[in-house]
Amino acid sequence: MELAANVWPVVDARTGLILRYFVRAYAIEGPDAVIRATLRALAATDCRMARMFRIPENFKVASEHGILNGCITIAGFHHHQAPILERAFSELEDSFAPVQGIAQSDIDPEPIGFAISPTFPKEPYLVVTTLVETTDGQLLPQTGA
Image 1 (cartoon, one colour):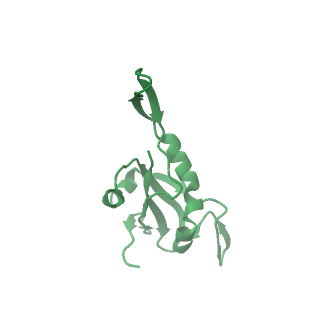
Image 2 (tube, rainbow, N blue to C red; image 1 turned 120 degrees about the horizontal axis):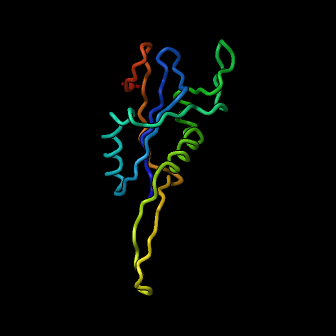
Image 3 (cartoon, rainbow, N blue to C red; image 1 turned 60 degrees about the horizontal axis):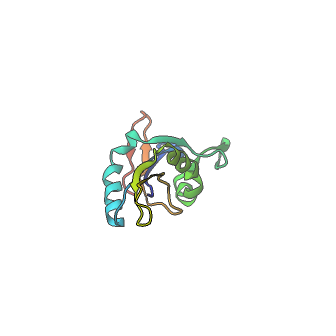
């Protein structure tokens, strides 16, 4: 069983930088169209139930104040998405309970219990929705480009 995810990078409205992002994983089976439609439908509200992760410290932005560790631009987030999300995916995989089941083979009629732990594939299905954090702390979906 593979996992898919909604990802919400949070862009500071004043600086345009991302310090954190939210991720919520789902065990969804079906054709790509069903997975895409499900993730998009849930993206509008599920950020409130997602786990927050910080941008790893090795990502840096140079500014007039010096080098800022643990932040990135939105373009950088999209470009370096895989290494940024790596820790989040690992932690989310560990948080899922194994799916329990019973199998029976043609050779041995005795039922055998099994557990499958859901994991993210090498190239997981993601829907990324950028949130803008306003100066009063609201998180609003980014509109326009």
